[in-house]
Image 1 (tube, rainbow, N blue to C red):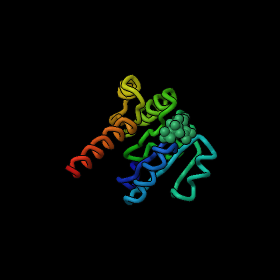
Image 2 (image 1 turned 90 degrees about the vertical axis):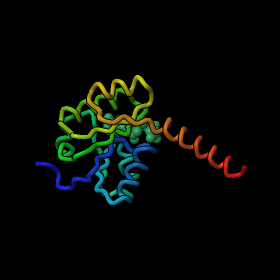
Image 3 (image 1 turned 180 degrees about the horizontal axis):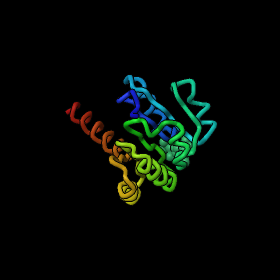
Image 4 (image 1 turned 180 degrees about the vertical axis):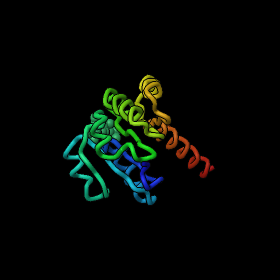
Length: 144
Ligand code: ATP
């Protein structure tokens, strides 16, 4: 049976990007299940987010046990470890998660993520850099 909350989101990897993403989704009124393998990070964010659990997301069985397969969408916010991010997307594909979002740190990383089944690939650093450049330029024009 599918998860009851069609707006639920699983966020995997609570670095700066993952934490802010999870917090924003909660503020927008969505149920968030946050997951990180690092006990310290889980501890740090357990007060701010409603459901934070410690698990290694490359383990398909662990994801299944946590009910990740019942969520309509999952975001893989792991950045630095290409191996962990790719193996996590692979596990999510095996579980049949309908919408898999994954963070890439390079074009090659993005290609691998797509080939193992990611539906959406995002580049937070590149996208933020571009957005801030446009913001700076638009503010320049304000002063002309
Ligand atoms: P950011 O740039 O968002 O701050 P970061 O550079 O701190 O990220 P990353 O390596 O991108 O760190 O990892 C983000 C988070 O993902 C970390 O908290 C890390 O513990 C977690 N993580 C990495 N591998 C796994 C895994 N296999 N299972 C669960 N969580 C993982």
